[in-house]
Structures are given as structure tokens and as C-alpha cells.
Image 1 (cartoon, rainbow, N blue to C red):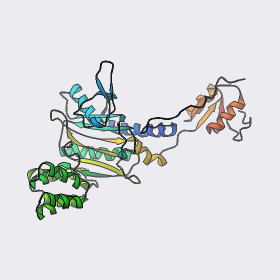
Image 2 (tube, rainbow, N blue to C red; image 1 turned 90 degrees about the vertical axis):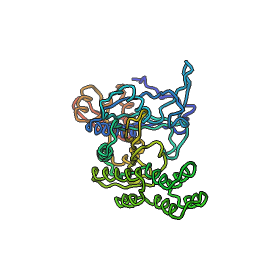
Image 3 (cartoon, rainbow, N blue to C red; image 1 turned 90 degrees about the horizontal axis):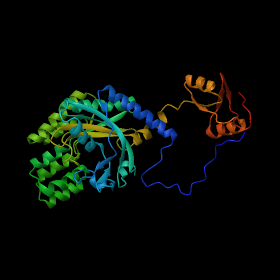
Image 4 (cartoon, rainbow, N blue to C red; image 1 turned 120 degrees about the vertical axis):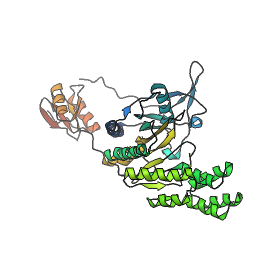
Length: 388
């Protein structure tokens, strides 16, 4: 019997835009497994799921406005493809939960797009994140909850990650206490964030800073390590802002009670984050698999959260993930039912031509057929054997 299935003609072109990629079945299954496990953990902690549109109104005030894909709809409105979730979640909270009740716990997931390639994302312009937001509270308990949840989520998928905590406002507070303002302060933020002692010296000479202030700036670049970092930071904290930052971090660390690394030289994006920031690093990957921090929504409503990069997580965990269920070819519905009841995946035969079915199994790597209540091995040589 001839088969109606036909092989497609070879494609004339298989190009896709740079920074995008096809996700094929094995990786898709791994990603879905991880996404489902993370969502399960978020739900168990009281975070409820929401879905956000991929299209947003473009705005010059959006933190990723310069990096967003933009398009114009039929009415002439400039739209942007979603480039990060925090702003979108802020819009959702303002419009859907203006009166709370707070704290509000939400989780989300979906694709993001950036117009430019970035090495930070492995030169991807389209990528997938899942994450959580805790809205309406700014207490140390709320920050500690997010650290606990981050560790629990990564632990649930088998990642033993190191959590690294920063507080960008601490550097700004120390610079303010040292009497630094304007362009000089901005330039030092960048040099300290890059931990570039040479640039700190260059800027200190350029701006005529005292030897004492220069020593303080160098000390900021070295604020990396365990709990002892908080003691050193406490010695540098002269003003109320800096002292409050150190006290907040001490309380969060005590509430978390697990191992933390502190990087108080983190200074970049200090204008966006209003409190702690944190990242999680997994063995074998020099980029974080998770990142987040505390911010303020429009109107001053406090928020904090984190996102997990699903591509990176899949890359880290792929060798350790459970294999997909065995696939068998079912020659009838009874066989398919039997196989599925046994936890197998059953594809139905589409023809009575045993030679064609045999060749298909060999090509697909299917090792068994089932008919009725009988399994039979596929002849890997491709001959017309293996009768059920």
C-alpha cells in the first residue's frame, strides 16, 4: 500500500535572523520540564501566575527603550516588543491591582526581544525568562524571602548555585559622603563597578581628590567576599544612607542564614535599583542563571523580584535531566493504550506497509513496536522484520 506521507522538498533558504534560534524537540522538552518545575515552586510559595502581552506601547522612559524592537501599527502608534518584564509587571500592577492587597506575589514567564546582540546573553536577541515579583513591601523579610525562594527554585531543578548580593546605593552613598557629585561621581561609579583601580587613580588625580578619599574608593572596589565584607563596609559608612544600607544587609543576611557572597562594589544601574540586588551563579557557567533586585514602581510603590534565564538553565542542566519516555510505534489503538498506560510515548502507525514502518522506526531511533498486548523489537538493520 502506498503512503500519503511525502518528504518535503529541500528548503531554498534556511536562514533565520541573527540572535534567534530554533528549539528542537529534545531541548524543548528539557526547557518545559524546567519551566514547569519552577512554576510549581513559585506557586507553592504563594506566587500567582500572570501572562503579559508581547507588544507594549513604546516609551522613551522605558529602561530598555534604546534596545527594543519597535514597529508601527495600522493606527500609527509606535509599539515595542517586550524587552524586560519588570516594567511590564509594574504596568500590570498599576492597572489591575492599584489597591492591592499588598504584599502582592506574582510570577510570569515568556519571551523577550532585544534589537542589539549582547554578549551577556550569549548573543541572543530572543530569549525566555521566568520570574517572580513581590510588590508592596520593602522590608528585610521581603528581601530574605526572595533569596530563600531563589535558592529553593534552583534547588528544585538540581542547581547548586552561589548567591551573590549587592547594594548599588551603598557606593553612591559613600561617594556622596565623600563630597563627590556630578560627572566625577558618575565616572567613579563606572570605575568602581569595573573594579578598575587604575581608573580610580586616574579619576582621583583628575578631580584632585585627597589621599584619604582615594583610599576609600579603592576599598570600595575590594568589597567582595563573605560576611566580613559587611564589617569592612560598616567602617566606610559615614552617612545615614550608607549605614542604613549596611544595617539592612546585616538583617537580610541573618534572616536568610545561608551562605551568601557580598559584592558591595556593584555600582552600575544604581539609579534603577533602590535596595539589594542579587545574582546566582552555577558551576561551569560564568554568567548568572538568575538575577534580580529591589526597585520602586511609578508612584513609589516598592517592588522586588528575580528572573531565571531558561536558556542558561537548560544549558547548565541538560546533562543531568531525566531522559524522555521511550517512544514506541503502535500498530493499533489497543497497543497504543497499553504503551501509554505503561508510561511510554506511543506514536500510531499511519500505514499497513511494514517495510515503510520499519524504515521510519530506524530513522527515528524507535526500538520497539506494539500491537494489542505484544511488544516486538525493531530490526535495526532496516529489513522487513520484527513482526508483532
